[in-house]
Length: 317
Image 1 (cartoon, rainbow, N blue to C red):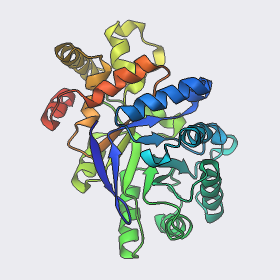
Image 2 (cartoon, rainbow, N blue to C red):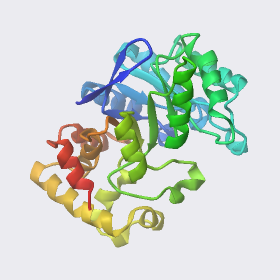
Image 3 (cartoon, rainbow, N blue to C red):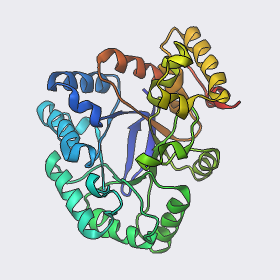
C-alpha cells in the first residue's frame, strides 16, 4: 500500500492512496459481508474509510461506525465523513450556514461516538454564497472547537477553492487542505454529471491542483468499471456508460490498460487505479466493492509497478 501525507492543522495525517468507500450500495450488504470487506481492506494496509452524512440520511455512517465499535479499530483508520449537503427533498436549498453545519457535525460525532474527525468534507458548494462566509462558519463551528483535524471540500470548483483558501490565509484561518471530485483514467465531461452535482476533473483543474500541490480524493475512480466492462465489448455497455465514457481517447486507453494488465498478470482494475495511486499529483482513489473478489482486484491497484511517467503515458493521447 502506498500513502500520502496530508498536513493537518496540528499534525501530519498519513492516508493510504486507496480509500474504502461506503456509499448507498453498501446498504444492500449484510453486516458480516461489510465486516469482511473492511477487514480485508485494513489488512491490506488501507486506512481511510470514506462516508457522508447524506448517504442514506446517516445510515452509511452508521455502518462504518458499527464496524469500528464492534472491532475496536478506530485507531487504525483515518476517520472521515462529509456534511452540509442539501437534503434530498430540497436539493436547491444549500446547507452551509452555522446551524446546518452544527447539526451535521454533531450528529456525525454522535453516530461514531467520537470527539473529532481526522478529515471532514464540506460536501457541496453554493456559488451564490461568498466564500468568506463559508470559511468563517467552518472555522467557528468545526476547527476552533477541535471537532476536525483537517478540512476538505467535495464537489467544489478550483476557482472557489482558490478564493476560499486565499481568504482563509489572509484572515489567519484554516482553509481547505484537500478536494474530492470525480476523476479516473476514463476521461469524461462534467455536463454528464450535472444531475448529481458532481465536479469532474479536467485538464485545467488537474494542472491547478498539481501546481498548488492540493491532494485530490477521486470518487468514481474506476468509472463504474468502464475498462473491465468495455473489454468485453463496448457495444455491450449500458447506454449511460456509453454516453459518459465511450470516446476515441478512452478507446486508446482501454488498449493500454489491457496490455498493462496482461504484462502484470492482474485484473483490468489494477492499471485503472494505478493511474491515480501513482500519479504525480498527490491523490487517493476511493474504491468500492460488494464482494471480496471485487475488493482484492481493486487492491491490486496499489501493487502495480508504475511510475508517475508511466501514469502520464497511460492517460495522454
